[in-house]
Image (cartoon, rainbow, N blue to C red):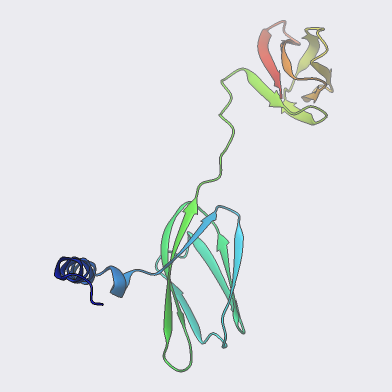
Length: 173
């Protein structure tokens, strides 16, 4: 039994719109990655050549039948994989950005529990830290060493040889 005329016309119209938009001719197979993620694609024959529209978005490493796509930075890139028989596979690589912690405000130091962070502080004579169990602090004359003990915040007061005071906030996460 044949489909009704309206269904056949709707299918033909949808195909014509897709062809006119160029979607089937230019669009590549979607490959979604995140920054620093690596995807290995394997083909049924050795790769002859590889090209990309944005080399700083994704690094490409072809070896034999495998292609490694390495996410370098957020963005989009078109990739073409060519074979010796002239066949070409088009890929549309999209890389999502890695999340980064928010920048600390001036006068703030952030450290992770169990980690130690060195903050340059030449000429520091005394160090006063809020005793709330959040951080331990020691000074060596050229720097202040902050060790995260438990999550929270603590105040830090640095006094230099001339008596000048600098106040910092320590954030331990």
